Length: 267
Image (tube, rainbow, N blue to C red):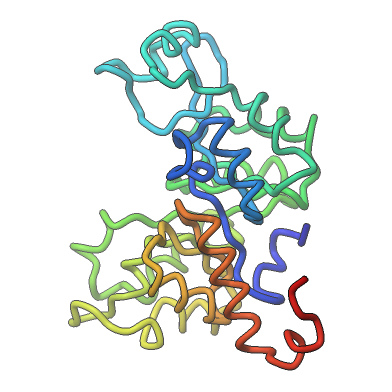
């Protein structure tokens, strides 16, 4: 497995969004196992903490109207059709087999996350991401050697169109993030224009000039997967379809290096 920050040495990383979440329920052990079988470089998963202090792999902030943070682990499991695994269970399954992209959904329990990770995986096999700059800053303060990324969602787009190029980098710099992880719309827009081709992305251009890796989420369309996987400025893509992404990446690599594919034909 490649060190996390050597993102684009050969081609963008393929990160399985909540595992192979089209093949099995997202954030389930089955989805993680499927992503590993598909050849994903990393498994992305969401972490929250229950009222009794258990770190669980769960996306939504609430379950049946009650915040996860106010439910005990047992209560949360009773409310879920697909029982959410604990972070410890997920890390044990993935350790030594695939990189982990841990999204911290809420700030405040970063030390507990790091304690579990340190017990099972090395720093080179982990990415930490969050939409919360304070969570990224907390992880960097505790473990400056861990690769941390700031997630940038679409909620910031509407009122800050003029800051499309600079805002993600400014936010990442403030919290000490090593890379940015914008929604794909950030890369498709530019000031005063609804949509632009990937090649015209001001965010990609600015990040490339600054030497900041970019990981894009959540990319599922075959056309966009091909474009991102072939763009050397893209460090990684997060997708619900890791098997397809791995296949398209291989095709892209063969197209870029036809001589090597002739020397090493498929069995």
